[in-house]
Length: 482
Ligand code: AMP
Ligand code: MG
Picture 1 (tube, rainbow, N blue to C red):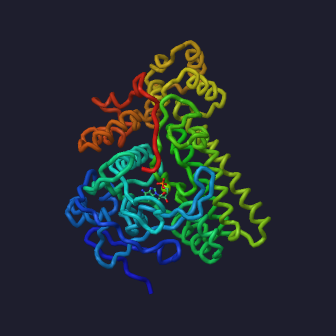
Picture 2 (picture 1 turned 180 degrees about the vertical axis):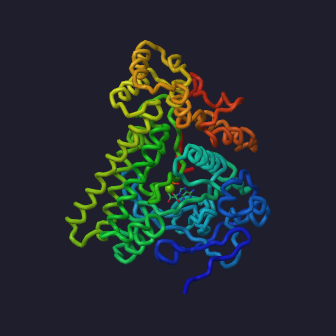
């Protein structure tokens, strides 16, 4: 018999995952929170989820957002494995996170509500299970920025300060994030199920993923191959959209890659300033594995790990399964290249991709350290020349571009401004806003959040958010273990 979703005044939680795939989550409760104080609440997202934002600000609503759920609601920690920097970790799981439950949003889509920083779980290993204000607000901000850019992403519903002090390199204010995701199925979830050796469990997981994300695969001749294919396509699309805005995820471990195609886990991520494929911000990415320019390749590598996990389902004959999966994986590069060149053509206002013109531009931008985001807006405005220290080679390039443009220049510029953001979370501005928020001043955070939430819509008074860090600023460094 189908269990009825749990009734709360705010959400009707379902637990389809725990029911369909028992064995990949464990019931667990959130740690008590001494003095929950909402720092930021996403009104639009709450409304989209069918909740009343005002009710979420009531004590019972705030309680819910830190895991104090009504009786009858079972919160769970997910089990998953993952390759971290290429090394397989057989048991990661939600060390400091809990799934509150699933809700059907106002568009009829099933979404996960998931807490981060809700205390130690059986997967916590040596971790304290906690999260702190700065990194949780960073996840909120970056998720909204990505959403504003039209990039598939998990989004934060709230960040609630806990009133606790959490020990990192120093004492910091604790916080719990509530994140909303199409699901929390990761490549690492499949790796975990495959490594368990329990074929039934793996099949149940794959069937669940099909039903939740790619229902059309159910009717295919080989449903599991037909599951792999759209995941590969979704990730190729995601990588192209990251690359086109200069986003570096920073920790593309297989446990941080979703089956849904949403960006997940905003830890050491950051946007590039000047265009350089070798850009790395993360303090622990010594080898540059997750450098800006490596991301598509890494995504493909991660997808190969997913394919490996699916092999036993694809065909009993391993060789045949591997051959079929390899064929599907081959579609990644093709799709990625197509989207990258088409996307770049749009950014440049060109009616069609022009690989040579693009390669020459990127070379120029790289060698002259041109700000990636500013360049495209300036190109539309006719002021890009000023961004080059030696403008002559750019002038020559611009002449070549001119000959390819459509006649209606105003329309070309307008179309460019619809795909080229004016506002991104500039690293120095993000750090500044988070530092202030950590001290209790949320003003700067909200100003930045407002700018990046509507990134294409240039507004008076926000010019300060369009500038890269001033010269002399130390290089930007981001941290994991947040
Ligand atoms: P992440 O870097 O957020 O993707 O986390 C990688 C793994 O470390 C996941 O299994 C997390 O649940 C776990 N983890 C990260 N921070 C903590 C913490 N403070 N306490 C317990 N587990 C953590
Ligand atoms: Mg993670």
